[in-house]
Length: 339
Image (tube, rainbow, N blue to C red; front, top):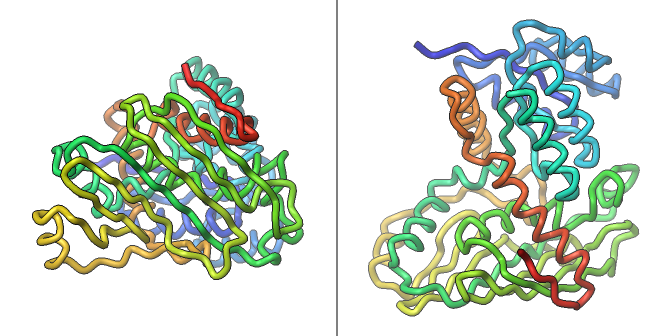
């Protein structure tokens, strides 16, 4: 018998509303409360989702029927928010990044371990069937030994995106183009390629009036011996679909905009010719994404809580992309070696 789960959502911005929409579509999930600090948004959420709005986190967390709390507030507030949720004994599903630094993530890990709750992080693109197919090609050896990985998240956001917002601030965003937009594709790259041995990179703010970077590049050497390049930005008009291109000893494959678009490996290309998919990309519109992967992520976490198993993306998995991005910020063109 499927367990019924009560949900709370922290925040009423775009991604919080997206979580509320997804919860509404899951039969054994019910939204029981939303925490807001903006009155106009609160009224709209209450109307759209028929859920009570709370202005105090302690009152939300005292709701006995809430099992899982979705953390969708500013990235730099995730750690103190999760600390309060863990003390209340509620399970946490946190939007990416889990926090803005590995130090803060390690503090979260200590709190979660002590409390005994479950914590998952939302990297919904791992639920994309096209991505899962790509990973199967890599793991099965269809490409041979992987030699090179080229990753790009060359996106665009208009100046208005950053106006009167926490986005692009060091305190709340921890940076900008890499840790906010680019982190999803960095996560997929690490999931495909394994751990990084060393890297060097540059970040700069070349167009937007923000504290964080709007253009970034890095060169990576993976522990497997393969090499990699990374570019990212939110100043690269008009914005291109994010992409990962893998080159192996038997051929290459191009994954762009959430789908595999070409390969020089005959067996892969033959499959592509028979398949047409369009999962959407956030290249120029942050909300131009399908909800199916978020729904799958939430359902996976519900299952993990019910059966006391690790969620698809646990704290250790969520830490990896932040560690790499923190290292690129630290590099300033110098080599950063990982343990």
